[in-house]
Amino acid sequence: MRKPIIAGNWKMNKTIKEAVEFVNEIKGQVENTEVEVVLCAPATMLKDMKEAAKGSNVKIGAQNMHFEESGAFTGEIAPAMLKEIDVDYVIIGHSERRQYFAETDETVNKKVLKALEVEITPIMCCGETLEERESGKMEEVIKTQIFAGLKDVTAANIPNMVIAYEPIWAIGTGVTATSEQANDAVAFIRTLIKELYTEEVSESIQIQYGGSVKPANVEEIMNQTDIDGALVGGAALKADSFMELVNF
Ligand code: 13P
Image (cartoon, rainbow, N blue to C red):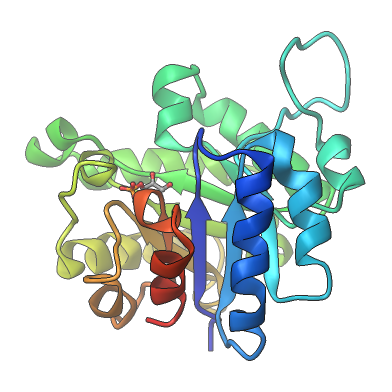
């Protein structure tokens, strides 16, 4: 049985004070949860969030990380810097990073390998544009992203990572993929993992759906056969809304 995983992706939102208040507000409410609860926040607030979350079931994630250990990469954050504050997760290759910050399948792969090496759980994102879906290229696009992103990732490491399927046309648009579309894509990703590794390995990995998930549709999404969780932007910004997602 794969553990459900609900992760908030706050993107470029919140102050340190707001972030700590959020953690303090939810941590008592997730004491007995069976769900993996993750908040992915901007780098400035991660340390304080980790401290606030100490001893609780709230896991903290970054939204990006460089693949090099150190050096002349102005503005970037090294894996060891996240490790130093004991960050649990890191989102890799979000479509916004691919679109606005020139992330490629190659850099995504390097970052995934690095995150696994330093034992920060990568949440590797993939997803097609509306144009790609409408022209029947969805599977081809996803296959390219998954195969490239997982290059040199060993079978033993697959259970140590998460994949998020986030169709770009459903992100921040209010348009959710139907639960069937989301499940079909996630099931397709699982067949790709099986093709690369084994059926057992493909059954071990948590795969999330992301794109306009909200309290009103989370239950239906989580009830799908292949979807193990949600990666949520807008509806994860308020503690009460986030808790409704966790309590799907
Ligand atoms: P929304 O939930 O705001 O559509 O964002 C989805 C997303 O990009 C999560 O990473």
